[in-house]
Length: 126
Image (tube, rainbow, N blue to C red; front, side, top):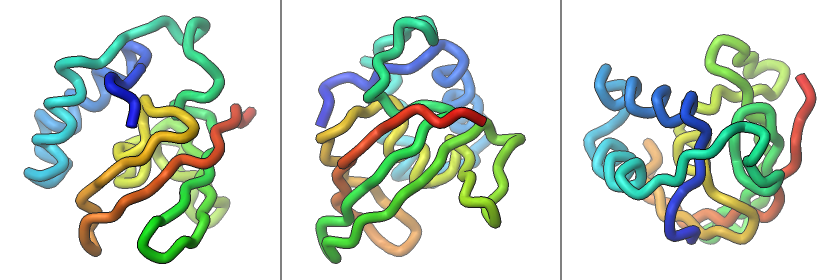
């Protein structure tokens, strides 16, 4: 797992707002607050292409089932689940945001804690 997550200032502020509005569970809140304290903030143009952010497509492996899933992350107002576009503020978005290919994450999902690994990150043009 990456020591510090890497975020744009806009995403940093969006996550803080999610916490402030109590849109996350208490477990998620504890993790996110801890991560934000050490987060590295960068300009969008300085964000490495292998970092999970808005307008990217990722593949993750669930270590308990060894199943690989793909997610496309968009801004919250652009979410269209029927088209496979997930908000970056969804549970899987918050679990992976600011992390990079190869990172292993333990996250308290609604159906229990999971160990997931980011196997691929690529830009997605909206």
